[in-house]
Length: 125
Image 1 (cartoon, one colour):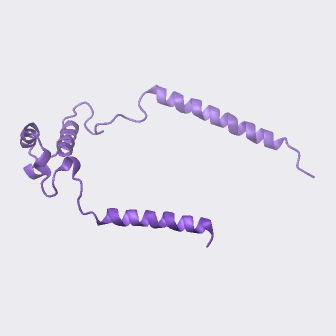
Image 2 (tube, helix red, strand yellow):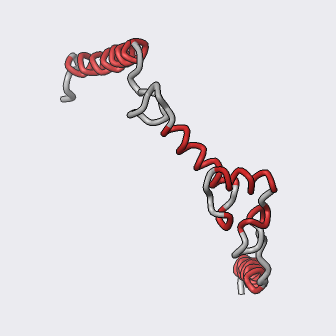
């Protein structure tokens, strides 16, 4: 056998044996969410209190649920801009239209330069 083929096969064998051994391990890391089936395991007493005031079920009390509920309440209580949600308008103010005009002039000028440059060229014989 050639030496490069032996080296390649040995590298593949090491790789596949390492992935096979790692796939046989059954322990799973549960990071910040606690043991599966118990999402409240990592909730602090302050978070549980806030979940109670926000009418969030105790079994679903996580930081993400609290933040999502706060966002919903903030949008519902938005009196200055009730039908637009919590964001700002995309085309708000005159500066946006000025930027669009400047970009149109730049890209239009480049396109016109290419067009007129192409019209003045002589075709190859």
